[in-house]
Length: 213
Image (cartoon, one colour):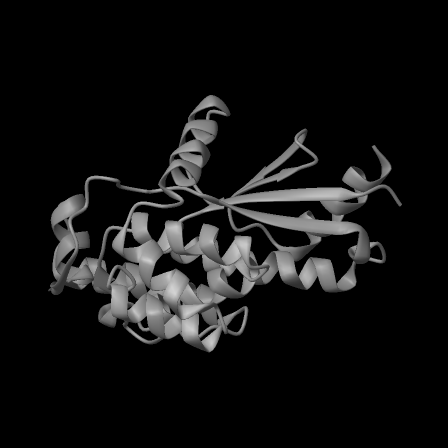
């Protein structure tokens, strides 16, 4: 089995990215060559212009963005929550905060430097979608970092400065060069692409193809 690199572009506030993560993990658990697989998470921002406002309800923002009534937005959220339940996730979408995700992406690159990127992605998704936490808040990120046993003094310095900013921008630029217009986006060995929260069978087939190519 040849080594397989899976690069995953995602955003912390993308519910389909968390659902897609679970589907990919289910495929990876079934894949005989999983020990040859390396996963790298890449930064993507669905809306870089968003200003963090933890007092604004995502329901209200969604309704305003698409010109929906709040009831229509609530129904759309309900459909996504049902999808999440199908992969074992308990979303609380009406509790989610309106946040800019740039610092959360810097946090994941910091975690990667300490060998904990996948755990950081999971913790951020859990905090945003299941706990209603403000993932743009430095204190929230410090608390997550503490749970992940990341060096707190280094993390504090990172959050207070601009380190890993270039890494995030590089990911965003590469996404543009690849023509990525939505996430999640999975790239296997820089050649085979899968877009969206596909079923685990699709990811399993992609892993097998990447291992044989």
